[in-house]
Length: 381
Image 1 (cartoon, one colour):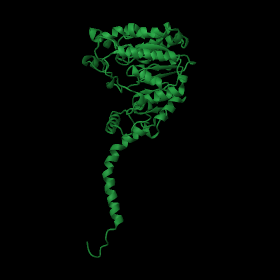
Image 2: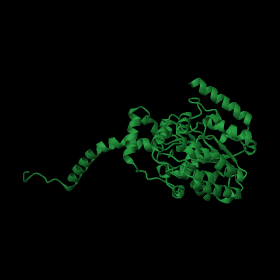
Image 3: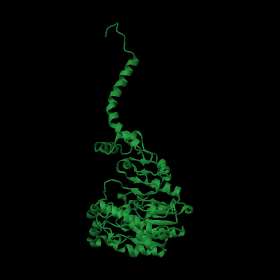
Image 4: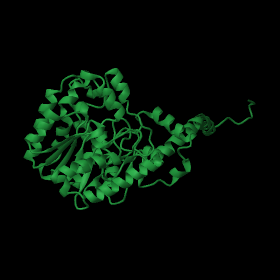
């Protein structure tokens, strides 16, 4: 530098430094731009209280988040707000039940996806004020709830109370999984970035946007075009994932069931217990293993007796033939989850012999709807 050359000012140095930072950040901005657009534009980060308000409104909505699970919060808040006459309470296997199975004058809400063991039913009911108790409860009981060797920690916590009180999820949780999933959707043509510049108020979340999967206003869950993956056969072969071996039924769970039904009777809640079917493949596999699943033989005599003790209804559909379910007839989504068609068939079967359910439904109309569904399923095969 010559003596006469002006010295570089502090400001020009700062500008050069900022330019370098900007150039350094460009690749990261490009990399993160699409995921941020998709996640915010799809509504993936919508506050959970806003989701609950949308589901409580008259506008149809589909809430399907890919990277957080607000089901506990949504189910509790929507049940408290709606005060339905009927609640359907269970695991994800209850999710395809629909409120429209009941008459228009009977309000119903599907609290599916929460219950992962017997004690969870009581924990949820504890948060429902006695004055807001439903008149009827459809209690969906997975077979595993009666298995003394069942490992609940593979599906969720032993205590769901903290989840019922949790009103948000960390936005940056599992960030890399979010990034890679968005790019996978983009390169496979499942998302169009331009659609996120005008976000929908009725389709919320990536699962809803990509798979048409999510919760509807009544709490029921649509699988849309999401790939089925239940892990049932793996569980059977490896003594895990809800298919742990046991020759005997859990006495602890029977005692918890008895206490819960006593609480429901005290609250004047009429309960209908239902054990949903396994697919023909899984049922026949389990049946061939003899005493390894011997506890299933005690479901009707032991659990059914407790429901009868309180004058409640009970239906054990473990055997898919009890509902006329065959492979590929449209009644099962996968090996353990029924479709809405399957649940409609189960509900008609229950309401045909249960006076309380019959009084809140129109069996002739439901049978006509089932006939149309089955005809459509047959045509699609």
